[in-house]
Length: 139
Image 1 (spheres, rainbow, N blue to C red):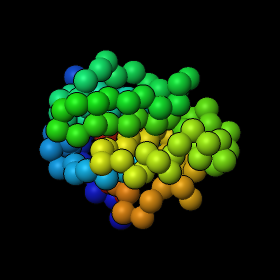
Image 2 (cartoon, rainbow, N blue to C red):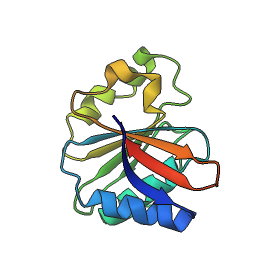
Image 3 (tube, rainbow, N blue to C red):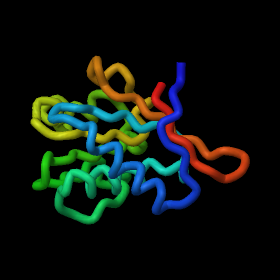
Image 4 (cartoon, rainbow, N blue to C red):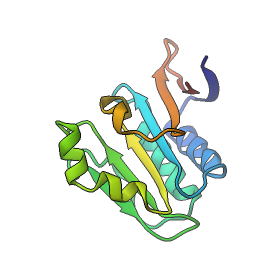
């Protein structure tokens, strides 16, 4: 069963949704972000990082695979599974070590390796509706 969490019309609203969502996060949370290109995953992540007062300009980690945002209430580790080819590659870049950190892990394209996501992760699905609004649902 899906639960609508946010509905946004602009990038700024998606960032604000991430800020609001960040208030509920605790150390060790893994947030699985799933949705098509342009659905708002990175803008939402910008809001989460901002809401936690972590340091750094948030961009999609598509080519670097992971960005770290230290400081603030909690550090944020922002992954993008899009260009990772195998579970072994993800493990080689330190996935297991990040899971042991006392921070927040945001994972774009999390559906690519669901077997590596921990039990209790927070699954969020991002969609672009026919009217152009973007929705975030918890699945």
